Amino acid sequence: MLVDQALFYAVEDFMKPDRVVIGTKSEQAKKVMTELYAPFVRQGNPLIFMDERSSELTKYAANSFLATKISFMNEIAQLCERMGADVDMVRRGIGSDDRIGKRFLFPGIGYGGSCFPKDVQALVKSSNEVNYNFEILKAVEKVNAIQKLHLVKKINAYFKNELKGKKIALWGLAFKPNTDDIRDAPAIDMIDAFVAAGAIITAYDPEAMVNVKNKIGDKIKYAANQYEALGGADILVIATEWSEFRTPDFEIIEIIACSAWTSTSRDLSEDKKKRIPKLIDMLWSNGHETPFEKGMVHFLVDTDIASHIHLLKHRISSMNAESARYKELKEDKYYLPEDWKDLEFEHECKLTESGKSKVNWYNILEDYTKQGNYLYHKCLADLEPILGRKRAKESARFFKTYNSQIQGDVSFNMRSFANFLKLRRDSHAQLEIYQIADQMLELVKGIEGNPFKHTLKAWGY
Image (cartoon, rainbow, N blue to C red):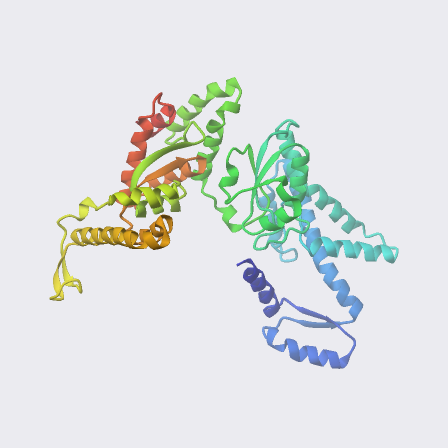
């Protein structure tokens, strides 16, 4: 849970401090605080006493210095971009200097949160109160404000100042990973700028979406996962360094990106429509599967309940609950694995009186299934006069076994199609899933007018 994670980092910082700074002039207070913090500084981390004013300034100065490092590195990144240098190489070069250190040298889209902005502002305000112009920190604030919108400016230039109607996928909303804190988060500034320019944003964040929705409402769309946010997107922006964003599944991204191209063909210009077959041919020649040319396809397949749950787990199909629970189950259709036939195992088994016998799991499953079907109808007959037909059906269905067959309503969209392709390539997928996949493929091939000819060609059919 998020609260546990946040508490973990807070407790970790408290238990293992780099240093403890205490502002007091009281000898009694120094004695008490020394005893209190003794267990936490056993490894030699310093316990530093100073006057109250100096301790306050130490706290502000520490965070302001780190904010300065961030803004400085963002300025270096801007310079590298213009001079053709590699900012990552520069970072590694200067970070290896012990006097500088490796931390807080990663360029990005600016700092946020509850500490850095507040403490920089507090130090600037305190300086003004004593008639001192703290020019460096004012520059730090200015650079950070510009950096938050740097990507917006670049993206706007890429689209030739025509962001209206462009679909932007946004990964990350919190100001940093492992938190739901969105205070002064760069992503919020970017959202405001994109929306003002007429762009359409679909965002995903593992923890911060509730807070963002409470703050800005339905100004943007919210995705269930990072890949769903990519559907139909013209560009992807990563605003928070969540670990799951560091190693995405590029295979899924590629499929979804192609699907965004083809599934919205009704909205494409005639020139782009002509390029679609060429694009698919190019992908096929390089060994890539391609997505359905239409945005969604529905059809019915016969499947057992266990296999259908497996498909649901992979977000491939949807099932009409009314049909599955109340209509199909009454037919007592069930699935038995053909490769189980004639396989017998000799071992200790409580299913036989002798305690040791040859067991044929195919026959046991068949008997077990028939018994479940008998109990289903018996329970239904006994409960219906008392509970009514609907309630009786809801109760009796629990006797149905997982190999009971139903007719599932399977739907494909961009996301489920990507998962389907991945599942078909999985050598560990159960035999029943392969059979269902083949059944689906035959249904697609048989659709009148062959609307999926490019996809079928890409598959090699």
